[in-house]
Length: 392
Image (cartoon, rainbow, N blue to C red):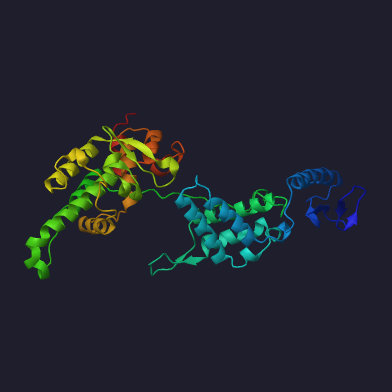
């Protein structure tokens, strides 16, 4: 390094200029990324302001020895203790760190000043296209994580680097000043749900409640087990209908209790975040469904007065196997519990309900942005019906 006439400003043999600083008693060299003397002086002054700010707040004596493992300890301690962060969000952050450790084995032992935006970009591209994983209980090995998973891991790295800046380990987060050509976020293109027509959905819901054909081996026992079988299929049918009539998430429906029902609305205990707790109106078909469930509880002798019902509304918390069987029986493409939520949103929009209102019913906190991306489309039957109204 060759010293210049400006204090702390150096140049590497005809190459770019560098600034020399003292942080925590150690010398730090920072590239000013320019070969122009006047520009170098301006950037040196900006770096001096940053260093002064770090000195004012104080930097831990051992901060420069921090590795990403140490930063992750600080990061985890902060979000685990934060009551405003939902448990699912905390779980997602743990999974993001686990993906990093699995696919970048050296990462946790590295020091933040050794990691560049280029390295992070290269790793994220490999994670998106080459990394392999197997879902719990699955036999098939998948190649390439989803864009959403990759972005969650990138966000985790960025938060670790922010903590490194806070502690004076590095001067700036390289992900926040990276060249625009580097890919540090991956585009998420939500798949448009492929949903059955309203007629097919009604057939599917009826199919779930059809009497079960008892096998020959237990035919002699049919009289004694038939009431239990019938109750189970009705429980499944009611649960699936509620998902389709409310747009509730699976976990939300499972947590519903009779105390959540109001005269014309229903309070949904949100599971996504604290803000997903919401009150939604009871559409007419939901009113009929809840009245039917109350009447069945009275017939079964659970209570004499349906107004005295307490505890969980539904006896089942999921019914995926039953849905799979019904779809196969009707020749419908496989649906999941979440597809019933998609169905509800789509029908509401096709019925003329504006997207921001549907978004609030679904428990979104973005004013309708996600709903517009996911549900801003029409099923083919509705599209053709609307096209018939066009006169030119």
